[in-house]
Image 1: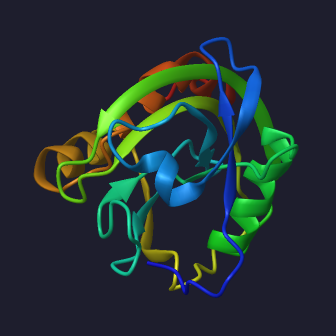
Image 2 (image 1 turned 180 degrees about the vertical axis):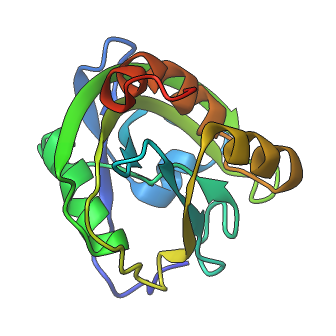
Length: 185
């Protein structure tokens, strides 16, 4: 876990409608049974309609080493989710999205069997394009790869993915299809 002398990272707690009702320290918000908090998930595609996946760094305290969507995280209290999503894409992958569109929200409760932590999230979804080479921060991202829908299906059947991945992907599919022109998504 993070250095105890560092300032705690705070998250926005929300109600079932996504209205902010308070704050909680990041780790405590994920301890069972989990506290409903604001989050975001980003799906970026290249010009050919391939999805950028990331494999989370092995050092991450939550869901280490698993494949997941392009980027995900939590806005700071009072930070708009759109700005938080763009900030984290830059911090984790070293790029700025060429396009980033809102793709709705999804609410879920996913326990992570490996860590024992719980993702109890009101998640803002974003879909966009990336047109430059990614430069992943190794403290955040162990690997990054662009995949077609067929390659994703094969990888998903063979490799571990984050507990939330299919939930956020399925919820974002209508906007993904708009951005990619379909391309099998």
